Image (cartoon, rainbow, N blue to C red; front, side, top):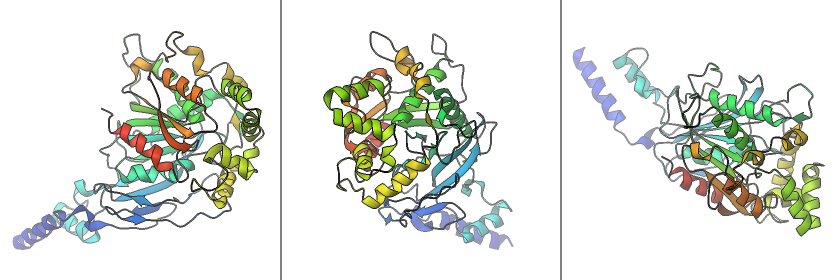
Length: 426
């Protein structure tokens, strides 16, 4: 018996010494997508149907090829789930997590023989912590967390970053409160974002997320367009809980960094729209009817101009893609931001009047990233520079891309700029 145990132990050690790529696997379970990503290999998922489901809870396919050169993150799991936030909102979140190689059946069997019924605890991945910080994504108007799922989430997860996105109130997956509301106040978005970030911790009282990120995961918050302005408002609230010496009175969120991508500036859309009106009545009209009158949902050319650049598919966005995105836009504009309420709470109302910096800049844990797009039809250079100054930076980073930096053929330009910034975080 002792000989047999020694032999089994030898086999186990030999198995564990195999290269990390020895246990690649792919499966589809329930509403989750599993993608096996070998070093240097490329995998493509099926295209999405044009008819967009109207259900608040849905799984959308990832529509991109993923290449991973990181042998420690061979498997990516994407899941859509409905969670009850502590703020009282029933919210949709999409997560895309890197999973270390899952032990094979034979390894599980050997492990159970050597270590008992539970097997080798170190080989389990169901409640693992991750070596890299969690990326928390927040979308802008007309979008929901699906916009991150197509490219950014699988890309960063393949590099070892756990990724989670929140769909804000008023989108198809996160109904507005109260039921039937057509406008959502900025304070509601801020409270939901705060509850979402707290829910990422396994030690949070709300255990429903069940992502296994750890008791105090480092979080990098990434906001796009209006999600950037919501992030600014959340930062105001979060750092209001610090005293004048910067001592933290709120240790429930381990914030590591903040990135704002093509963000609505602290002064909101009003001054930008006025600048467009002075420069080009036509452009100003397109922005106004596209958003305020929701014409971007039905007008293909206008939709392409506002979000994806140009009037053709040179950016890798086909007419079929436009139709699919317009279906999402229609579903995710059930309720929109209350602009009258926002006007009295804009982040610009609390900046340092001399420097233009936010009052919380000196408390940030690391230098933030403000990223703009060279072909952005919505956020102009003045708005981008305003956001950069607000976050305490001398200048923004600008990449070759339209407004929707996470979609279309140029998505990797923005993603690589974000990755370069991530690599510099403490």
